[in-house]
Length: 525
Image (tube, rainbow, N blue to C red; front, top):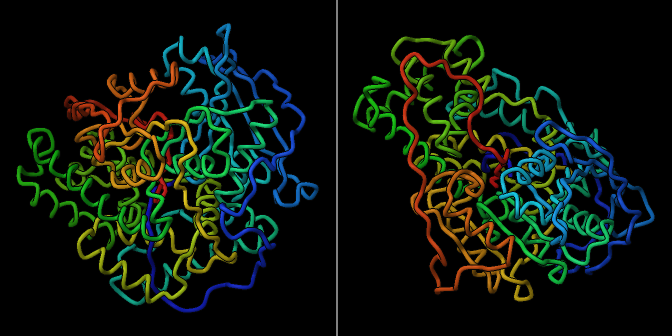
């Protein structure tokens, strides 16, 4: 699920009627299982990298509309790192989240990050979901939509609200005009049916699955439609299936605010490095003063208030970003070094991924109901912003195209499931992108599942990221199917969090992204 939440204000009427969705089941519960027709096996061709010399790539054609299997077909991009062990445990499909995230890089990462003896037992399969990356058609509704400087996020004037509303409306209109024939089929259930088409084309009776963030919801829905096709399933940083997607995004705003406050408290604990004060409340005042300053006069003509929020939001996903962000914060707050903010924005906040955002909106807006009355958006986000001012309105405008989306919403499936083998869930207690309650809710819905918790951790995507305790549970499960013993309503196993980062040594020049190895995107998952 890429980042962000829900919200909006502004003028009226949606661009309803621009697209008429082809009739199809309103819920996943109505979709029959085993509808995938076995396709020709993918033709795997070498596409080696230095790190993954055995990597292979292929493509697979699937129906645009799975209810019309003889109609138009689209193409999914696939890759795999083949098993090398004498006995294979079958395909391990991986997904990094989004919606809109490419799985091709994740397959390479997972194959290298797992212990060699475990990775050798699987064909690690990456895929770009429909609309994403190297799959065709690949969506890009309005190139340049996120270019700076955008209107400020917080609608302190009618003009700001109107400008942001028109941006959202224009994006939805562009998607409808450019992809009228495709948008009705860019949704989670369609992507899940693609996954089963991949399984069928591979000739596999069952699949194994590892999903992060939005990928956990993708896995849960796959399990609902095809429970007998699941061999093993790992869900890391778990989407709350009870709030798809509007309510979950509003809850996420509170969690992002809390994580931002954790970052500011860390800055205060390291006053010797940053000189911003030892009182977290004072550091917080200085951060919001910085936002007000760049809202009035964008730093370097590039970083306004909205761009500043984009820059610091990664710190809510992973504390490995904190030293980078703190240095930029301190340079601007103490020396008015505008270039420090511009560099941080270009490294951590800027996005030229029009494809990822286009698929994100297409899936989220199609998957479930969103308010079409802008007064509802306004009231909800004013209420949340009063308690969580860090990114509520930024998230609001990120999701605002859903108020104008040109396809009718589907009804999310009830993922409750008593037919799956044990599913292994991982969750940090203070994860902001997918708050802890979502993992508990999913554990309750997937009978026999087990929940492993990183106590006190706030990072998003916690396995294969350096926590040996978590990774032991993951690798034991993939190797043998072993899960922790169920202990009742709480976690089934608990691991300590990794240590917090330390400030960089003085004089160190920092560039590049040092964290988030999965490339996970978190919607409002």
